[in-house]
Image (cartoon, rainbow, N blue to C red):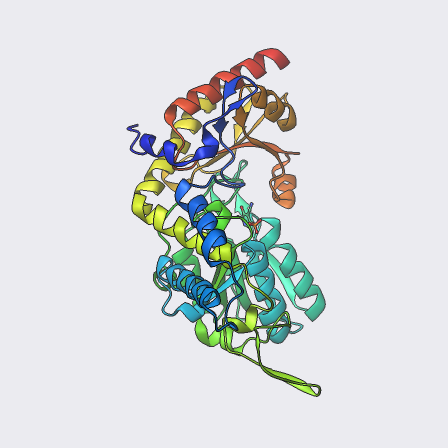
Length: 411
Ligand code: PMP
């Protein structure tokens, strides 16, 4: 493959280091991505010049911080093509965004007899919040199965059609699986859910930094993502929600910033998004997130998607010849994002990751917050290599050579 983005490695200071005495090969991007200088400098500039609390201040610094924070909200809205900045709620990340919907919308709307539908490939953060709220409300939680011995066929869409009954009030699913790498047909899933009157929530944690997202074209009701998986800071993320839904939802946390009036006898709430942002918000990281969005759009998200998918396809082809390997997810590379998970018959993933670390390679081994899926596939854990825009084909050669040494050592 041609390496369109080789030059941008210089933008990422953390990539240029040795681990032990080997150059770092960072292939743990599904867990978190590195930050370009533009994001780091934006954070430094904010703390050196504008640092202040937002919204309630009438002095210069507070007004600058407020302008920066609200400009970040407007930028996030354009990044996902939301109709209105008020549809963007800043959260700590994907996990908090999903918990917000479960605790606020779920508590207000779910009753015994109602169904929340998710899938068997959900990350724990799009599974446990729904267990908690269905247990609390008496609603039922159901799962769309994945199919294939290695889940290579992705979601079972025939089963989905059987499960999408009028009792389903909300269907929540991931855009790209953090373990299988499969890209789900999210616009189609939203359209199917709409036919039975169910709301939809997309977990975009693994897609937001890799490909263009247009919430209106997708037709979703909610969408959740994290800044740190898209070259932005940790501790900041977004919940997108259609405005009429957010405005009808009750607050989930109380405190400063989210109220209109407070009396000893009771309080009234601001509209969305302030209603859902109690307390001092994460101003600096919202502004840093805006810099990350500008950076990614500067590179071009379709080009990033093509690059990451091409690297994952190269990796899949290079690994599949290794003895005793099982690779999860789609065989068809056009259905795969930038992630390849695999397991060796005779070597535990933790040994693989520890050994690879000695070669300077950062991988992840474990259940990847997908415990029920691992159990279904009969695997205690997998090793995951996940790619981002700064990775190169040469790094796959380093990975494969390391895997060959591991297999020789252990077998
Ligand atoms: N969903 C998916 C698909 C993920 O991969 C992750 C992070 N691994 C999350 C949700 C949770 O993201 P965060 O920890 O940033 O809240």
